Image (cartoon, rainbow, N blue to C red; front, side, top):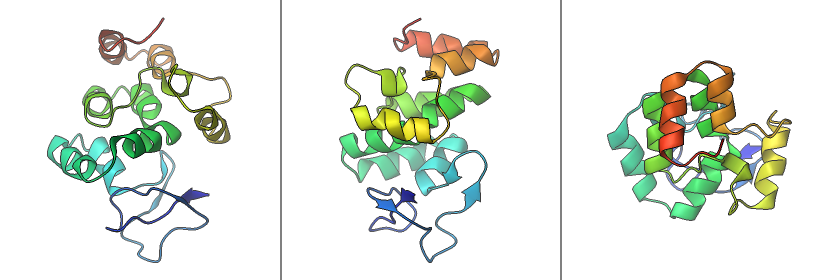
Length: 146
């Protein structure tokens, strides 16, 4: 599985697909995030202008669903990418609790488990386990639950 190509290839997919789109420049395999979209690339580059541009074109619920299912905040927290974490929280609506957030949809947790998060680790857990103190501070400032 993966995400289907959106109306504008590469920006932000809204549905599942079984294989990458035919345009190899819009998605590419990576060990960090699987098929990387333009939104993921902009977050990884900590490019706030591009993140804002992409996010502004989509329903905020869809954006949050996408970043939660892809565990983007957890992955960025694990790497200590503070500015990327801030973009995901502020611009994309990511919850500092991930799929464990009270308002998270039940199936998000299943997708995260399929993505390797069998221990239900939150972004805060990952940042702390990896010694990313600045990221831990950011997550706590945004309401992460110890």
